[in-house]
View 1 (cartoon, protein in one colour):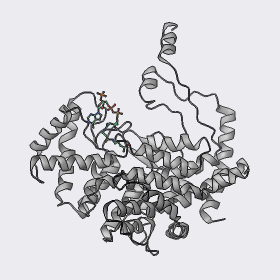
View 2: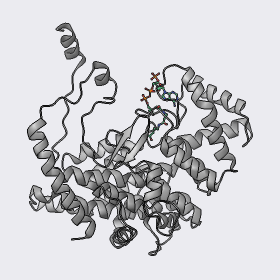
View 3: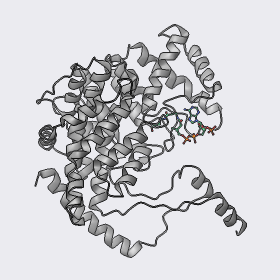
View 4: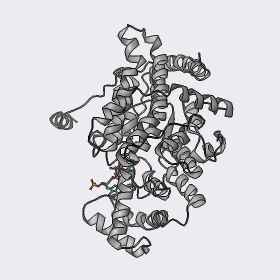
Length: 434
Ligand code: CMX
């Protein structure tokens, strides 16, 4: 058994036993109550799901297994680069332990060994017109990869429940290994005349992805390592994570669950916001006729956007109530690598000018930037201007968190998810009787 799987098995067995006895003793304890507003209002804040890999605090932002992003930057192995390797984060999310450099290198090599995209996956993507959105191509690519699911095959053969976690791990590892070549294929097909770039077997997972996309600049590789790390997980209730959890609870395999999650990520209120931000900034620059607008010009443009009934993309959050630490991590990167870039400067001007405007509307719970407010400007700086691809980058990263979490869901034996719904008719009856 490989070292990561062995460690996961040991940790999962211990936690499963602990949870079993905890439920036996405290299973009836009330941990939350639900208001009518929450039932109508997107189930915000209702504590109703277990997600081991990360936890989101409204003020402080995300912590992965207890570690904040600055702490991860310090503690996770960096290999030959300057930013934490996403391999290390995956190891941490799966085992609750910071890996050593050797363990991280092992995982790099393991994903490298598992990279093997069948030709029908590329054929399925090729069957779509080039104008198809990159996220649709991505989902089709993942669905085509599902032919490789060991979970699905073993289930058909009658595998016992006790083996679910094992094959979920195998599928998750294989899927993560194969996402960068599939994503890079989509990018090159859509935007670079289909000229593919072969992987470089000596690179780590994120920098090989950068290489296959066509970006060999050492700083861009550092950006990809950072990007793949900070977008990986945001606890269980966000739409892409929750979709993975819900679909996986039917024992759909990791490929089917993750493809479903990517359809959730493709929505403009979720992952698509990263393309919307840069599209909106480009429109602003076009509209104002300058790449160096004044703060006053930006304020006017924001007011115009709001007056048209549109949202300011990259701002606001369903849970966060402070600037997103993932935004801050990217700002810190930009300060180091590209502080004189015009678009980066605009992102910072927006950060200074937008929150008071949103706050003055009185209805927005969080006027601060989220992760998507910064990412596009960094990509544009290194030449990746095709914003229609940005959500795919988010998606490749998101695989790390949601698939590590799915391994845990199968190891802990979580059942089919099935919350209760009501009709307004029934709600009225309930109100009349109280
Ligand atoms: N610009 C303008 N209006 C906004 C706004 C923004 N950035 N953020 C929230 N609002 C509005 C909402 O549309 C809502 O208006 P109505 O009451 O008229 O419908 C009101 O303010 C209250 O919303 P909220 O409770 O503060 O925010 P929600 O929890 O409902 O929504 C989010 C959160 C992220 C969908 C919302 O802030 C938004 O649309 N932001 C812009 C899109 C975006 O950046 N999404 C990315 C989120 C991160 C991610 O998942 O990737």
